[in-house]
Image (cartoon, rainbow, N blue to C red; front, side):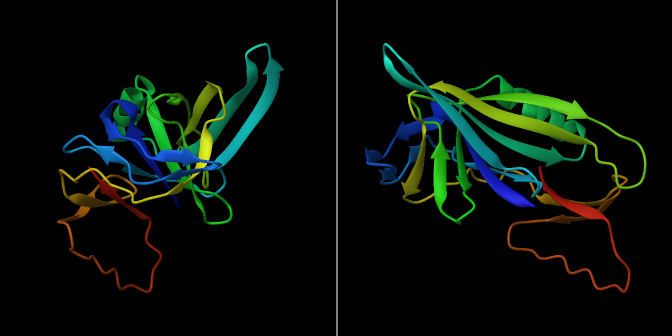
Length: 188
């Protein structure tokens, strides 16, 4: 699983300064807000953009695509809310460097499609595309990352939805078994 962090553009109070191709400084958020971690599958997380020259200058059509695995009510609700908002995406590129796609001035939006399949090894998943059209809007980031405070414990469940455990911040669940287990850790 790969980590992508999402923030609402409306929650930003202070934005860093752009020098060249890098945002320098810290992003300040409203109280209780910050980046929220989304865990996505490793076969996606691709940023692509195309440019075209117009009378106004060079415009970019950018898209950052991720796959959110599993088909659960909580994930569907989260994606529905996010698709109605303007967002900022923080991610690590293939070289391990932190980049930001979007800004309070030029936020990105989310488009979601859902697919379900039957059979062993098939995945029920959400294909997400964060998209944007306008001036170049994908830069490196040199600053701290403020995450939103957790409001609920992490839940460990079997793939069929049966709860194994509930974990408070700082708690650890160790699974010691000779068998392969199919479970997920979810922070609700």
